Amino acid sequence: MTAQPIFSAHTGYLFKELPFEERFEAAAAVGFDAVEHPYLETFEPAVIRGLLKKHRLRFAQLSCAFGDLAMGEKGLAALPGRQSEFRATFDSALEFALAVDAPYVHPMAGVPPQGSDADAGSVYLENLHYAVQRTAGTPAKILIEAISERSVPGYALSTLEQACRVQDVFGPGNLSLLFDTFHARATGIDPAQWVAENAYRIGHIHIADHPGRQEPGTGTLDFEPVLSALQAQSFQGAIGFEFTPSANTVESLTFLAAWRARSEIRRRA
Image 1 (tube, rainbow, N blue to C red):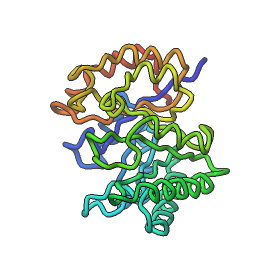
Image 2: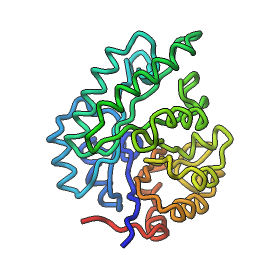
Image 3: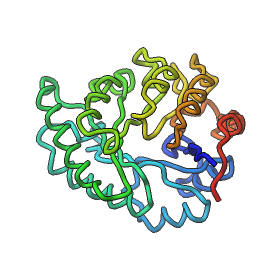
C-alpha cells in the first residue's frame, strides 16, 4: 500500500476557542492525524507526548527561534549579531522536537534591520548551516518557509525563489521547504503549478485560501488542482491547515471529510 500524506491541525490557528491541551482531542475528533504549534516553551515534552499518545496524533513540525515576541520580532535566523541566541534557542527546540518525534524544525528567519541585507543573508546561511549540522544523524530535519511581504513586511525570506536558492545550498535531503498556499498566491505563484514542478522540494504544506487567509472555499484559490498535483507527485508529508477560521473552528472544517476521501488519506491507528 502506498503511503499517504497526513493532515495536521495548526493549533496556533485552529481550535483557539479551547484551552491549549483540549485542542488535541478536538483535532483528533474531526479527523486530523497530527498537530503542530509554534510556541511550546512553557510545556514539558512529556505533557505533549502524553497528549499525542492519548489522542493517537503525531507532531508534524515545530517552529523556533522567534526572538522577542513582545517586541514584535518574527525570528532570529537572519538577524546579525544574534547568532549565539539563535543557537541556544535552536538547540532547545531540537531537543523538544526529538522528544515528541517531530520530523521537522523550522527556524524563523525574522526581519533584519534596514540596510543589513548583505549581512543578514550571510548570517542566515551561517545559522542554517549550524542547524543542519545539529540535525545530522537525527530523525529531525530543517524546514524553511517563504513568508510573503503582505503578512510580514521585511521578512528575510519572502519569496519561493529565495527559498529555493537557500535550499540548493544544503540539498533537499537536509533542508526542505514549507510551502504555504496563501503566501505563494500572495506573491503571484500558482500553487498547483508550483507543487507539480517542485514537489521534491517540499517537506510540509500549509493550507489557507487567498486573499483572506481563511479556510478553503472562502477565497479565490481552487484547491482541487493542488490536491491532484500532490497525488500525482506521491507527496507523503504533512498537509497542515494554518488558516484563520471564518467561524467556529469545527464549522470551518466542513470540507475536511471530502478532502480526506479525495486524497485517500487513512488514519493511522
